[in-house]
Image (cartoon, rainbow, N blue to C red):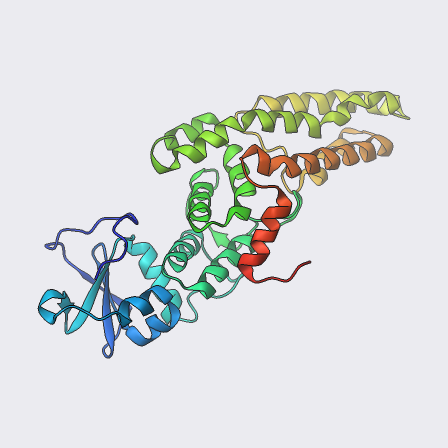
Length: 328
């Protein structure tokens, strides 16, 4: 029995050594799952109860035994998914401690793999749990200054587009469009030098959108620093003159960097703290804080349209419907 042959991944040559996976090798009422060079002998009853696709697959009358691949007396199902994703998916089904609800720590690659396969094989509770992990970790926010728990380990260098691309590809695959505004933004903050290696293949369209968004990031950076034009309102110019010069120089350095992040969650705190340290008066700092917030909120509202997505209201409604949530 084969799953969808167009789902990606390739079977290894039959001569390649197969690896039995500890903890996923049952002995009764079993079915063998093969992905790449890994094999998993698991309980058919439990798998059918958790997955609608496997339930239909197992219930469907099988060909004569001579036409069905078997291993140790159990039928073999070959999946055209990565062995890494299949192992994470099966462990989540058979080991209740493996994939605990958010914010229990986990790896981003595990969450994304479970999200993809739980959607593909009809395991709704795991799909919702994976989406909740991404939500809790900050990949879905309702405002630019909403903080996530940051409980997922990327397993890669901190400043790298790969983790954003993983989430974008998975969210697109499962139709979780509400995850895309921030994940696409988080990809677009990288420099063209960082993004160009990913411009080919399946990641290409996402990278092209990120590169096209760079002009919007420049504009947002200018807008969040529009307070630099209010110096004539300063009540204590003798104290603030130097502070304005410092703030302007800091802004120019920021704008000239290859990476731009105009709306980090701690935008106001960091920026206003720097203004205070530079000697700017409280009246000017308060005006700066207000203008930063207004500009950042306006850019956040615009994010979906920048990446060709429905407006936030529709995205929030999609999220509530997919997660079975009540109206706010």
